[in-house]
Image 1 (tube, rainbow, N blue to C red):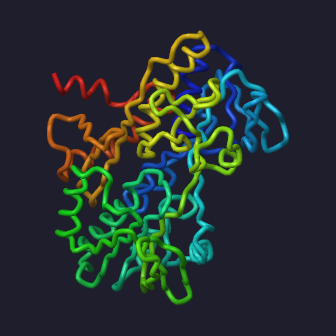
Image 2: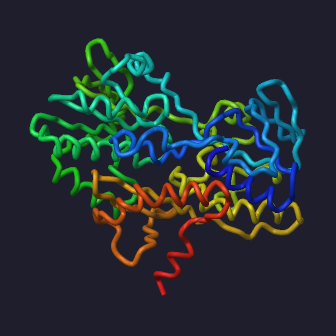
Image 3: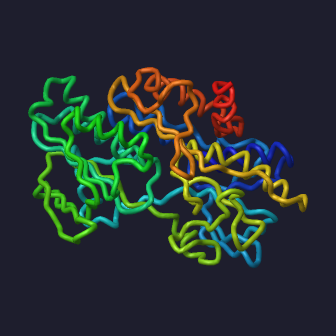
Length: 399
């Protein structure tokens, strides 16, 4: 019932009719997760970020409010959380990523402190904590982390850095705030074209960036975050007044436990072009749980959806799988309360700009699109299988 799952269930149930598509998902709510960064900055409310799952799934699909806990690809079956066994002709795995807050000692306890100064925009359970902490903050040090793991929306951990910095600047507190972004990555952003622009942003805004620096422990009693240098293994303590933690992430346990379907990292092992499992021809994956080497974003799932749909139909018809996903991903890098760099790129980390201007610049137009237009597009088109990415727009602007 996430972005990819809703989109494909809509497309497939429209094709095959009532009761032919079964959706397994225990969740009552469907979240538009790209809005979480905006909530962290007080620009949106949590209540704006979700709708009832019942309203997001197609009426022709059969919704079973249980989770998949075991995959048996040899017998073409899935076991649910109640022990029910469901057989399939085609399996689409669209389970997203699992947030592993518990992998960092002390982090869950720190996030449980009422009105605390440890925050995280990655979960609806914690997303409102950041703006509340900003409003209470007077002066001191804000530390932000990026984990040593795959991450959904890899730009989000630094978007909240820029939003925070801009908040303090607008409230006359910036001179009393030290802002530190510790990322486990060896670069600030994976696409050099946009990374060069981001280095200019952090330099202009006096934000300290430490690369290859991974959060490994939180001591909330002393307001100390322990980071480890990934080159030397040396540990360093950072005293904080606000700590924003991005949790380590992985494929859900049910996927990782089925090694027949996964790659070495525990994600569904697929052909990166067709999104078909490399071992079982009747298994496909879409979105964050896939092992395809694209950036894990909602835009990626939307771009994958027509490819997966057409290739599932081709498989069922006994035809070759000809539709190909190019790795398209989009990351609107919000840099404040009125600016955004719209990063779009492919598998090769080459820019795939949609608009007829250079997108490696901070622009209000891109901010307005991110804040106001993208939510409208998402709710009305994406989960209903009616948005396949901006490829057509890109072709139009290139004429």
